[in-house]
Length: 119
Image 1: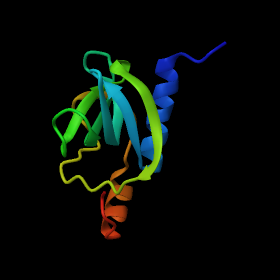
Image 2 (image 1 turned 60 degrees about the vertical axis):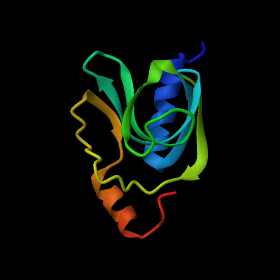
Image 3 (image 1 turned 180 degrees about the horizontal axis):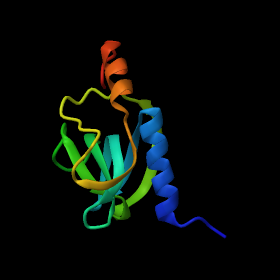
Image 4 (image 1 turned 30 degrees about the vertical axis):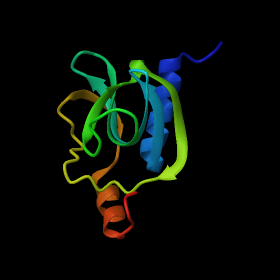
């Protein structure tokens, strides 16, 4: 029996977060390239991702946006890694009532302290 897309995508999102890897997907018919920080369930019950858009199409680059997993298509895990150095990142994201996976604060601080460039 095939795995439902939402379950596959959720796992892929958590892999990206755990391994600090950039994600690509199509959202509202525009290709997005993002650094994923936190994945969970919103107050409206939607599987959601908090991520910073760093490339692709659309607006709102450079700050943490909330994306609805169910609206994503062509979700792809890239080989590109990132340093989680967003100064506004809150691992206890109040927009999510349940968190499935997230960039852990200690790991983010340790990696950011290493001096690697974010992009």
